[in-house]
Length: 274
Image 1 (tube, one colour):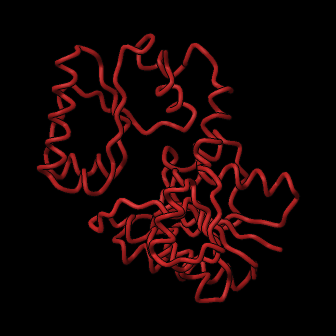
Image 2: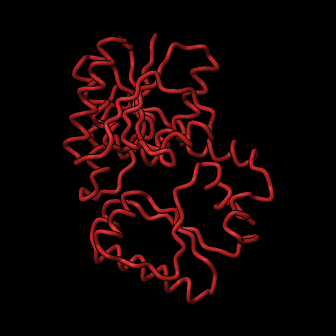
């Protein structure tokens, strides 16, 4: 059996790690298709380096664009690879454009699809991710639900119990494993000139939070209030999308220290500092 793993963003890279490692441990035939939905060093390559992941066999380099543009590029790119490689099953993870387009390309070719992290729901169709995850679940042959709650979501939508497997969440596996590998004291904290846990850490990148000026401004004002209230530094590793919106909306955050996106291990250090 040959397995194709399709990923394209940093969350997928991180969460697919345990699956890829298990395929390697068992000596199973597999390869990685990277759509290139995330493509900068800080959003992509650094995660492969941090987690010692094998390089993708294919990189579609789709880059940024509208939802339609990204979906179309991924569909055509993945289709070409699947026709060439003829895998037996495709694995996707999560709720991104890469997940939806990759699964759809496989289904159209009659290739079975396994969806890791199936059954998660926000019940907010204003989120493009919600549409992606629901459609992917209903296309998939194997649904790997992280929790019993996620399984019940799938059953309520009429999906067959025989397709659903409650597996736990791979992000927990990654975090537990890598926390034990972190060195102390943290080089990351030294770089930011802070000690112990006397700081706040924030991440804001979802479309519904940063693409609406009033909402993004409200988030930033709230962060400034927290900074003033506690008198502690507040670090915000800013996603390229959010950074672009800051410029477009002419927002000038106060009380917030903007830093470049950091790798997975460095972010774990920032989260776990005590």
